[in-house]
Image 1 (cartoon, rainbow, N blue to C red):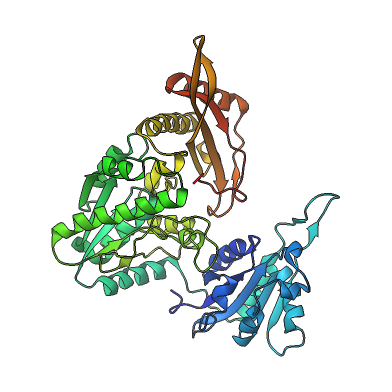
Image 2 (image 1 turned 45 degrees about the horizontal axis):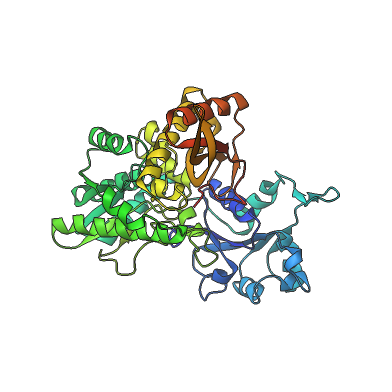
Length: 465
C-alpha cells in the first residue's frame, strides 16, 4: 500500500500515542505505518516517492535519562528524521526533544505539540484527552504534506485482490481458516481474487470453544460456497504441547504444527501452493516488528523457517481489527460473522496455564461456555469487545457437599477496546458475577473458585499467555 498511496510514517518513542495517531491519520483516508526508532534508522526506511511526512510521537521516561532529554532516544534517530528532508510533526515530549536534538532554527517544516498534563501530589502525570490534536494534525497532513486522502476501502479491495493475483499466478492457494473474522475475510477476499484456485482448510486442533468446530463447518457450507476441508487433528496437537509450560514455546509449537498440517493437506492437490492466512497489523506489532516482542502470534513468530509453501499470502497484514471488519462488510459478509470476537490461533491452549491436559481443557471449555452464554443472555454483550474464561492451573482447597476438595480456579476476563492494542476491564454488576460464579462452580466438575480479572492492557495483555 505504501508504494501506491500518500504515506505518513509514525516513529513511536513509546507511551501509546502512536496508536492514537495512526488511527487518526487513517481516519483521514491517508495510509500510515508505525516504525520503531531502530526501524526508522534503517537505510531507506524514511524515503520513497509516496512518503509525504513523518510524525514522531511518544512520552519519554525521564527516569531512564542520564542527561539531556535528547540523549534518551536511540542515538542517530533525529539525524535520520531530519535527513529525510520531509515535514516533521513531533507530538508529546518528542516535541521538546526534537528542538533539543537540533531542530530549532532549521529551515524546514518542523512542527511540535507538547501535551498538557495534570499531576496530583504522589501521582503520575495524566495526559488530558482529547487534546485537540485534530486541529494540528489535519492542516499538517493536507496543507503542509499535501496528502490527497485517497486510501479508501474501494481502493484497498481492488489493490489487495490485484496483489493476490500477481503473487500467486495460476498456482493453488490454501487458506488457513479458523472461522474467526480475520481468516474469514481473507478467505472471501482471496476467493474474490482467484476463485477456484482457493481451498480452505479448517483444522480442529482440540483447542476450540464448545461446539465451535461444528458451527464453523456449517457456517461455511451454508454461507460462503468456498471449498472447505475439515481436519480433525486434536490428538496430534494436544500430544505435542501437553505439559509445555513456556507460553512462547507453546505458541511456536502450535504454529509449526499448523503449517505441517496445511502442507500435508495441500500436497494432495499436487504441484505447488501458497498459504493464505489472516495476519493483521497488531500481530506484526506485538510479535516484534523491529522492536520488543510482546508475544509471538502463531501466524508471525510461530512460522517455521523451513516453510514448504511457495509463499505466504497476507492481504490484511497492514490493517487493524476494525479496518478488517470494514473490509468484511464491503465484501458482503454477514454481521453475525463480522462482529465475532477475536479468538487466538492457538485457541484455548493459551488460556490453559500450568501445562495442558485433556481434563483441564474440558473444564475450561465448559466454564468458558457458561460465561459467554450468560453475558449474551443478560444483555451485556455490547459492553465488551472480548470475553472468555481462563484455566489458571491453580488448585486450592475447597468444600462441596460437606466434603473437602482440591480443585481448579477459573479466571473470567472481559475487556472493552477500540483496536485491541489498549483495553480496559468491563465493570459487570456484582449480582451478575455472583450468578456466573454459582453456575460454574455448580455445573463444571473440578472447579471450586472463580475470580474476575480487573487489569487493563497495559500493563497486562488481553490474553493471559
